[in-house]
Image 1 (cartoon, rainbow, N blue to C red):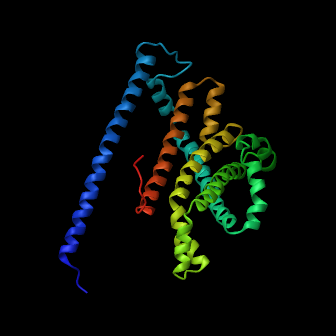
Image 2 (cartoon, rainbow, N blue to C red):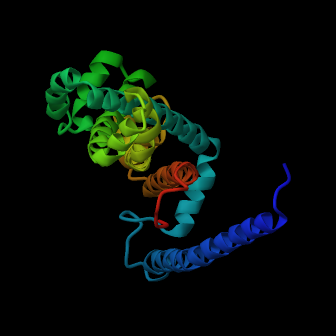
Amino acid sequence: MFSDPSAQKSKRKLMRSRAKSKAQNETPRIVVGSIAIAVVLLLWWLLTSITGIVAPLYFPSPESAIDAFVALNWQLGIDAIATFRRVLLSWALGSSIGVLVGLAMSRSALLRYALAPLIEAVRPVPPIALIPFIILWFGIGDSGKVFLGSLACFMVMVINTLVAVTNVPPVYRRAGRSLGASASRINWRIVLPAILPEILAGFRIGSALAWTVIVATEFLGAEAGIGRLIMQASRTLNTPVVLVGTVAVALMAIVLDQIIVHVSARLTRWAPKEAY
């Protein structure tokens, strides 16, 4: 079967138009963001290195931060890899289990009645408050940190999934049943695509929470990790290293967040969205 050349030409033209429109929308965001970052860096340099209004003890100068970065050498990379590995593992594990449990609770009233009170009782408790128990149960190894990070992501995703399923318009299910679709097919082909944007948005929230929990657990004990690096530097008032560690966490968190954003954009190309 031969394709229509005019249809192919129209399709290519439409794709070029969309790409051009996307580039035009991205340009102001990139320009304004770059200017904002440049202004912050300039103020930092003026307040610390030029005028000395801010003492080095309270916030380091750009030069001292660069010197600290160079002095850390490979140690910063080792700590960054250790923290990123814990965050990625806890985020993936907790989020996936949370989605599965949330879907199961949405389909089974008995399971929902049994688990909802437990989840609602544990959910308001800050994960950091459980760190003493985690150290007693797991020690200072990776298993306790991953468990606590997974627990935080699980709580976010199970509630997010339940709310997303509840918000699916009933007309979608009725339309599927009127066309003869089974319950499992409705859930797989109708409900899941409908809640996918909200689940992917929950992944971003869970990743940010995983960074917070993992770095906090590293403060209290770890063989390697950015949290350990920051805590050791703060004990000796080494603020340049504290700043370098904080910036490293921020950059890694941005990388993971942008990966989630780009994957989400490809999986939900059909959904209306605004660039962020």
